[in-house]
Image: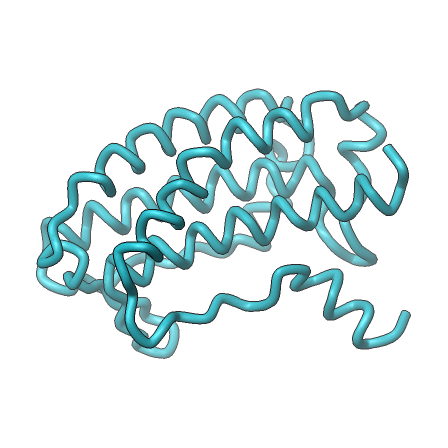
Length: 180
């Protein structure tokens, strides 16, 4: 497989780019994406068969099942990171080994409905929280220990809107390619 084709399969919507200035329009759009992701994802993956759920979205990629569980796990972490950022002064967050999590028994075999329900609950809480943040709250930061990268809460809203859309596109593109 060509390198460009593999890159397109890995990053179907490109990589996350932080706008130079994050506008209210950006924030509203990102929050809207987060608010609607759980329902859109469930509508897309619920009709899939067990065999289809076991299909990797790209060569050597995660299966649809693993992607659904990953989105739920990752966005759970994101919610906690927002809480830390709001209640601590630039905390250093705890990363997790997402590739290792994807190898765990639950990510490889659990019914996807568990993670779809979890994602609905996490996103309901997350979106409610995000809609109530002030401009000052949005400028609060946390630090990721890998690379000592500081992230504002506003940037993190965009990152997770991108993240959900990124994995949604993985599954959507697989469904289109396979004609499901």
